[in-house]
Length: 373
Image (cartoon, rainbow, N blue to C red; front, side):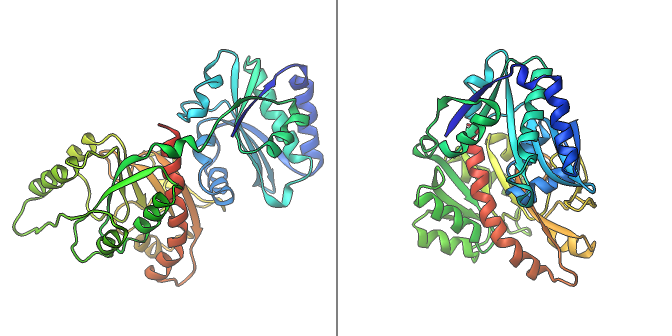
């Protein structure tokens, strides 16, 4: 993985900015330069690019190209508050601004749009007084070769992404259900694709499929059931906290866990991630979320998100992985992907279509978590 540097000289002055805008308009697109991005564009980014870039776009300023109001390409610059390890060197130096992420819809690739968006974003950094642009986490020499003629970018740092896989974080998974997402994570950990050591699977249901999957995978399984007639919620929550605390996890993953954790649990562990079967807003305070087609739907929180989306006749469902906070399903989102709903679809049919999306999303969330450590 490569970090590139581009010098923000006169190639990115006001004249270059005007020319780039003219090029975009000449090929039939409108262009917008704005703080953050509108909900529709953020949802489109998740739909087209896999769910990991919208949070970065949300944190920065964006050049957005549209055709007939629909987003077709974007370039983010000067994002704030990102914690990725590849930004901790050059990204912290005075006079260095951050570029990216950057993407163009498949049907518009290979033409003038991409280079023009790149130029506009670098012009934006120069406008803000930066002398250099960091183009971080470029995945290959081949991709770096794209940037060289476009903006004179040169390789400034070489980073070994595999180093993030060598130190495995002690992880406890909590699951109440069939455990298909646990299986995905367990397989990925065993194959070295995610940097986790899964020390236990904890379930509140002895007959949960996740328990059997853990046993078959050679992972310690612990059942911590709750008899609501005989034990108070506070007593159960204390018992659950004690059981997990003994395992000393660095990361707790909630994968189909059907019990709202109390504040003591959330405070005890600094890193708790939850898979939620809905397309959640990037702003945790909001109760609605925009979709790729420009619609606005409720943020379906709680255990029956898919059922509620169907009852609401929502045009979209989805999945998100977010950090757990004291407010249920309102922690910061790491990754999310929308999925168009089908008319007349039943809950189990929708869940079946969501499952492969969840299976892809959870490892991406784990890697993002790792990259932020």
